[in-house]
Structures are given as structure tokens and as C-alpha cells.
Image 1 (cartoon, rainbow, N blue to C red):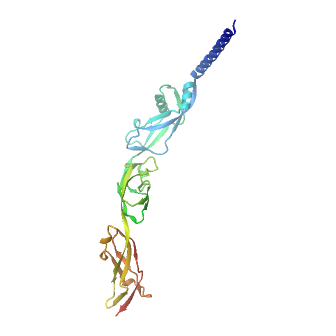
Image 2 (tube, rainbow, N blue to C red):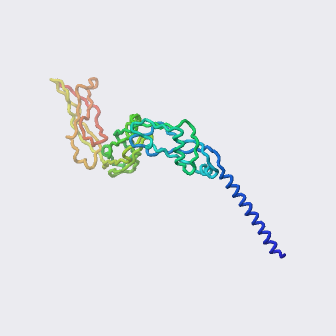
Length: 316
């Protein structure tokens, strides 16, 4: 017999041996994994279809453990992908209920229905499941804008933010809503601002998962104008002078400096201000009065009086 023929026979025997080993291994795996046995499985609970008029309060059970009769293939599948068990709350809820109680038998039926390929759950660990409920109510709460805005030199914001909406409906259990006073926004961060602000920013939902807000965003507007400094000399009005006395102020005018928008610069005049000295509040030791800025346009900022003390003379 030639060497090549001998080599072919040996290779054929080797391949046959490998095929035999492979078939034996497959048979062993099929036999072992097809065998049924009892095993404890842990699954995730998923709460679904919660009626709009209620919410789940307290701690929700997130896991459930149960004994199941299964085979090796099914057991391996459960280890690779932990099963999820859906709890359809709407199926058990009736108007006015404060809680839903599910016995172990109820849970066994629920799990078996969802693991229809196996239908072999025998028992559930624990003493059933109680789901606490509370009615949903709504209140309207103001919106607070958080911001960090840096204006370009010479520019300022005019007044406060205009918010749209300025308040939102908040839904949740009454006892939870009583602890909330307002809804805040994400921080509005802007630099080198020299134009009007018109932005949509997100509202931050409350940390409590039982509370929700109707509106997710708020529009904020702020008028921005260029400012410059202006100075006026204003007369001082003396009030509460006793009868029969003549009082002379030294000086009778005071300089006021303030920041005003370019747009308003030429419209602001002395008549927009009133500065008084109240004679009944005089400092008799130093013969002086404090000037008080009583009226001024609200759009102005950084108002500074050039004189903080006015002397006086009394003539009888």
C-alpha cells in the first residue's frame, strides 16, 4: 500500500474520531440542558398604566423573587437577560382606592401569564405586594429664573425678566405639593450681552418622581439698552418749617449723578425728581439736614447725591 493511501486512511479515522467526540458532546449538552429542575429567579417589576388620577406613593418594590421549574436552556436565558414582570395598575384599580393588594397567588398568576413559554412558577418569596396610592391634585406655582448674565460694558438690562408663562401647573399628591413654593429654571448663562434677550429655557422638574409639571420650557425676555452717565443740579425742598421761622439752606441745590439709557437721555429733566430736607429731622448739634431723594424715574440706576449733608441758618 502506498504512503498516500495510508495517509488518507489515517486522516479519515481522525476525522471520524473528532466527529464522534463532537456528537457525544452535543448529546451530553442536550441531555443536561433539557433536564428540568427548580431554580430561584429574580425579576424586575415594571409599573405600567397608572391611572391619571392617582400616583404610587412610598417606596416601590423594584424586584421580585420566585421559584420556577425550568430547564438548563431557560435557566441560561434568565441569567443572560433578567426577566421583567409588568404590573398593569389600571387592571386592579377602582375609584377611591388608597392601595392595591396582590397576594402571592396573584403574583404567581401574573408571572406565569407573562412567562407563557414556561408556565411553571410555583411560589413567590415574601407576603404578597401592597401598592400604596394617593390622589393627584394640581396647583399653580410661580416660575423662578436662574441666571448669570454678563453685559457688555455700557449695557444693562431694563427691569426684571418677562416670563411666559410666569407660573405653571404642578401635579402630585397634596402632601408633596405642600412642600414646594416655586419651580426653577435651568441657569441662563450669557456673556457680552448687548442686545435684547429672548430665550427658551428648560424648567427643572421636582426631584420627587411623584410630582410632574405641565410645562417643560419657559420663554424669558429682557430689554437691554446702552447706558451713559448724566448729571443734574436739583433744588432742595424744605418741609416742616415751624411757623414764624425762616430757614435758609446752604447750599440750596444738590448735584445728582445717575446712569440712564441712551434712549431716555434727553427726556430726563429736573422735573422728574424731588429732593427734600425735613426740618423736623434736623441735627441741631451740627445745624445740618440730610437730603432725601423722594421721587425719581424707576428706569434710572446708580443714583448718587453729590452732597450728603446740608447746613442751615434760622432767621426769626
